[in-house]
Amino acid sequence: MIQVLPVEGLPQIGEGDDLAALIAGAAELEDGDVVVVAQKAVSKAEGRVLQLDSIDPSAAAREIAAADGRDARQVQAVLDEAVRIVRRRRGLVIAETRHGFVCASAGVDASNAPAPGQIVLLPVDPDASAAALRDRLRELTGRAVGVLVTDSFGRAWRQGTTDVAIGAAGVPVLRDLTGVRDPTGYELHATVIAVADEIAGAAELVMGKTSGIPAVIVRGLELEGDGTARELVMPAERDLFR
Amino acid sequence: MIQVLPVEGLPQIGEGDDLAALIAGAAELEDGDVVVVAQKAVSKAEGRVLQLDSIDPSAAAREIAAADGRDARQVQAVLDEAVRIVRRRRGLVIAETRHGFVCASAGVDASNAPAPGQIVLLPVDPDASAAALRDRLRELTGRAVGVLVTDSFGRAWRQGTTDVAIGAAGVPVLRDLTGVRDPTGYELHATVIAVADEIAGAAELVMGKTSGIPAVIVRGLELEGDGTARELVMPAERDLFR
Image (cartoon, rainbow over all chains, first blue to last red; front, side, top):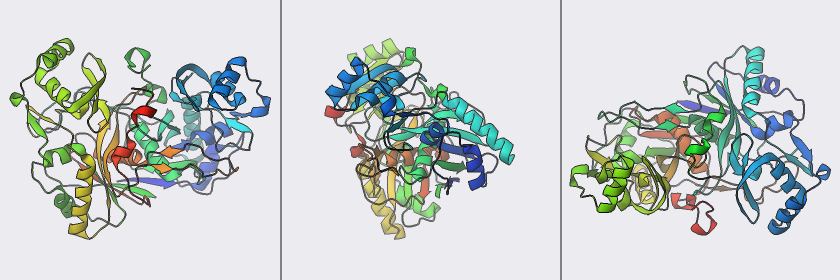
């Protein structure tokens, strides 16, 4: 059995907050737990917040904003975070971030910002964010836990977002079944399961989107190994959808 | 808290099996549970199994099979199930099924088939399969549960598969937060969460791939509403990745 438990009672997160200490104070962790933390909380603790007023949009940003009916300063932030625009249509920019993630607005988002007129960016290195949280949780609680940093991404061909892992530490992100045989002896070829993304989605079911639960504990996974969310990025040479 | 519980002790599923009765006999269901059933089990109960020996591959199937190093009969089955080939490269055909799902081999798979030399196809109408299971579970147990039929799909841009819903009954598949405001008063635009896919992924964490757990109970979701997996298919006019 797996349990997905909310970490309740966390305050609004601000720059410099010791997120691990807040989680350790609010929950009773056990060895083997995976602590799933919403990207927005991690980014806010790390100060990855911009004032829209401080952004001077370029001509390119103004052009896209005018065509799309968006705020040119926010478009500028998206362009700054993106290494490649994958698709664009009115009101939607799908971009590749410098981490290699393909998502709407290169992860730039105004929802759940600390205050109106602000936008939140993805962490600079979400795997490092996860590793730092894991180390600090170990230090504070003595517990060996995994940590995932998660965000809501859209998908090609399917409606709606699901939460996925953008940072990981102490969690195997991919479970490779190549060479494993099914009950009839058939070898499972090229079967690799993105368990970190499935854990992220399970956590979102508890987090909700506006209910103020930025951290969730997933207990009972019995996973072995370690990985980083970078492993979840499809290498360009294997990507059929660039 | 959400719990993800395996339905243990189910036998290998064969054509004509009363899958709902097997699940009802192996688990203590509660109102509000979501029963997640692996597509392979549903397809086998519905007889959606082909003998490779019975398939006479066309010239087109032979050509693809030769280029890709695959079994021409299996390629023929993929072509028969597909309404459109989305991408193809050596060893991989990504196709749109008649349901509108985009996935590897149009859902045709030799793993976990009843016997060697057989392949398993997706159910003809997985939403109807889910509805029939839900009705039968209600009849047998008196419990009002939701049912998801799930399969492992790859994703654009990300490594690994995650389980997603291909059939649904008594479960809201999309949670639309449009109009909901965050704590600072910012309205969440176009935020729709594919909760059915997140539930499917959570269930996969318990199912595993070869551990013989074709059904899982997800308890404590407290979801309201109803939906079908067809709603998860991105309409062609909004699909940027056709």
